[in-house]
Length: 436
Image (cartoon, rainbow, N blue to C red; front, side, top):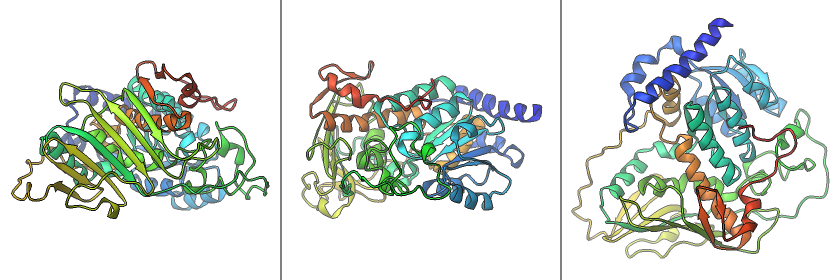
């Protein structure tokens, strides 16, 4: 036990010390390489072993997978076959108490990301969490606050952030290729299927611990409309945040990074009649951001399902299922995960992009592993990604109350709209509250 304790303290203190000495977020692969040896593998606990959990597990399998947790015993048994030495749990609270675990990967439902990750951080464990970081605006803030308090290594699962294309877009915007940006438009063709609240109560599948799956959410009987699968539970407000919470994490990430955004001053939304149960099939959200010493004030706009911003001359945005349009004083830039186009095309025919200055990523998961071991920066740490998710989920709040919110980020309140409070924060089922 003393050897295990010494080992965990090594990873915590080494990472904290290196983080304190790393300048301006520059990724230091030299320091990482010096520390990263086979004898210094992390002991990682996996919460949620199937779907995204399986993918995340494979991405960190170079380390020691020492604990597995899932509320579905069948999925847990299959994961155990791949990692036979790992301890198994059906309750993530028990895994978070396991002192042999150095770091935790959280790949659960939206509404358990924050409760699980906050407990892990407070127990001194590094955390990789799937997006979005929280189920509410307040949860996203708590995630950022806890990260800053505990100083562990964190990363949100927005893997596209690690790609070359996103880096080159950021460089183009920040170098002034299209001039000062006035607007950013973001869209996703995905929708949410609507349905009635089920009234039948089929039996819980064998091996599924339904009460643990419900966790902090208001209790309701099992139904396959909720579990399993992201496209089942994510449509319900009690469990998910719809397309904006899901895909917005990836897509709004690009203008958020490129324009160095933080907290908006206002937010409003448009869509179909509000359902108390279900996320909307289509949605438009708008955020206003104040000027900074680096850029003027600007607006960000979200389009879900079939709507798009007006296509600039020379391009048809209806043919782009996802994308971001930056509107600058000297031109426009359209991008998605793998493409970028400067417009008008004639104007940029002889354009030479700036020399790349954002270093290639070591890999989204690898970046986090090195951060755990050395304190080298993770670009989607919970300070950055927590603020991004606060921003996005405020759009859902504005939609649900049907008013333009005058936003005070410091107090986490919309002073002009007291009705927003019930969606900014939420009540937790007894025994599942977030402990801060």
